[in-house]
Length: 338
Image 1 (cartoon, helix red, strand yellow):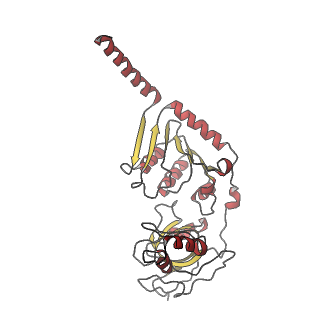
Image 2: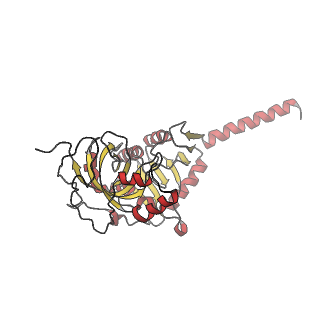
Image 3: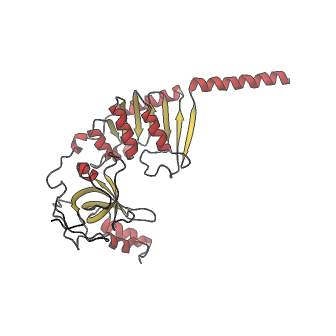
């Protein structure tokens, strides 16, 4: 092959590549934490005018939910397919969105599996898919990736798969999950005096009376759990695991805590980060039931609340105690009422 023919061949290949890119759309890849994936998702949502199809295992970011809500308000049709397990708890934000009129289907996988897809199609023109799971609480710090694809043939394949999933039988009886707050569930208006500094335990300040029902409560404070499972514990790792599973995991507690960080937006309202001392860093993360939305949105930093919730994860290095199924049963004041 002479030089002239070789150059012509290279030119033909180059032009072919350009035509292929122009016809099939551009492809981009974003990696975090070097780039903010959530910001790119929000921009894509804000730029939609027609439709958004989401097949995501879970949805727990207040900023993303707020962007989706704004899009729905301006007339964008939003359909969602989520994993059954993420939508099953009554305190799920996905359940709350369903009650707000979002078109949502909850699916299981085959033979007890899960719906683990994480992709979104915007206006039928842009596909975003990757490891980012739409629940990330620290989008600027976690190692994730998404691929942005404008190739119409690839997008059509994903739209076909989305339609197939969306048209499957819904696995969740959503009407069974819609809860109506009772008098016992409403926040107590009783105010009691709370000393400055250390937040009291129910042994120091009487806990508001409530109906316990069939919940299994354990009488333990966060400080006592720290002594058993913290860095000062004398128990081995295996002993700690066994003790946690036998006596504390999935049990309910009655605690007082101070609000360290509230909701980022009105659709991230039910996840509160709480502290055991007023003004200190959070040590407890609680997921509250949907019926307490208004009361929780009124809370301010350093407010002290009385609540019950179910222990789901003990505190570890760099992580908080995690509790769910939370009931807000009282708000305390730093001064005795007159």
